Amino acid sequence: MFGRQPKDNKPAENTEIPDIMFPSESEIEDAAQEDTELSKIQVNFQPQSELDNPEVVNVVEKISGIVSPYFIVVVGLVLYEDNFWLGLLLITVGILSLLKISWGDITGFFREIKDVFSSDN
Figure (spheres, rainbow, N blue to C red):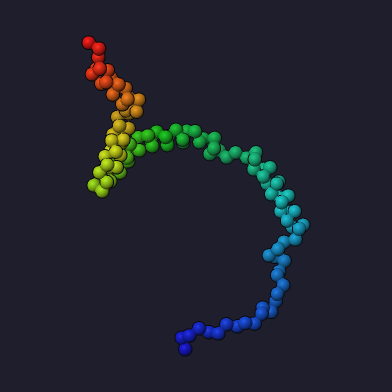
C-alpha cells in the first residue's frame, strides 16, 4: 500500500531529438553575426551615469572616511568581551583613525622619545 511503485522499463516511444534543442549551423552563424553587430553598437554607447560617476565616488569616499572609524570602534567594543586583544586592537586603530594619526606620526613620536633618552650630554 505505501511501498514504491514498480518502475516501467519501457523505452521511450519517440527517440528523435527535436531540432529546437540543437539549432542548425546556419542558425548559429546568423546568431553570431547578430552578436557582432550588437557589440559594435554597444561599444559607442556611454550612459550618462558613467559621466557623473566621479562626483558620486567623491561623495561616497567622504562619507566612508567619516563613518568607517566609528564602525571600527563599535566592532572593537563588541569584540572586546569575547576577544580582549582583537577588541583592543580595533578600538585603538579606530581612535587613531578618528584623530587622523598616521603610522609615520607614531614612529616619529617614538624616535623623539628615543633621542631624548639617548642624548650625548
